[in-house]
Image (cartoon, rainbow, N blue to C red):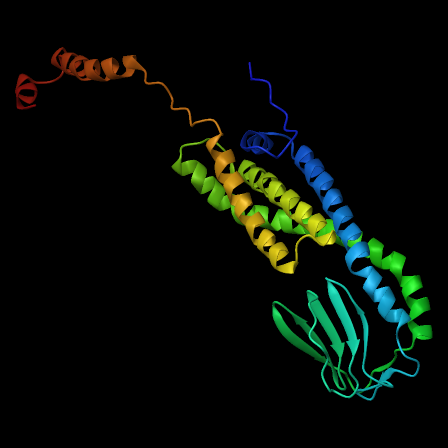
Length: 289
């Protein structure tokens, strides 16, 4: 009689992650779906709180007559459109430079390019000659109002798709090392079970990163701390893979049959005894043997 399978229901402990290795894969996907919904909701909330307000403020402060045409920016004067802890938006049509900003990301429209600056460095996006982009308030307010719901939907659904894709891909990448670790420590698991354990082990780190995103949306941490948390959440995944592997059942060795050795010892004398009783074999042949 087979033992009753223990159902997996939470991925927050080593034992909970281990149970996913032997359970139905649908239960694992359900757990991933719940975590992805949680993460997508927090990201959407953080975006509407941290990024959307300065974008809307910047649109309200766009000067009349500003535009990008023929690879050049035209605007009446330099102006800082909006700024908070997260993002700073400015126009610098004369290339005179803008005051330094304490925001995590600074975006400045220069005479011939857009400049992005953050703790990761600086990048430039040149204007293409064929671009014709009006930058007036009356041009962008209706566009933002029309596209804002779609952007929110894309952000929410896109987060779920990206998370599932990453979890499946990382599970495939981690399954072989996890299976090798199980072999080294003499634990019983298939490659398919190792993949399920690897995916489940990624969920605690994802939850930690989601909490950090919520704290970032509140303005309590900056992008540097958020980036550090992003790096740590991969380490947490490997810790849970190792811990869950050690909770797997040990490889069971087949018990030794004591009668096999005794049968092997008795087989040879019996064979010799039969040969000696063979009347068709000459005494010389038996003696030579």
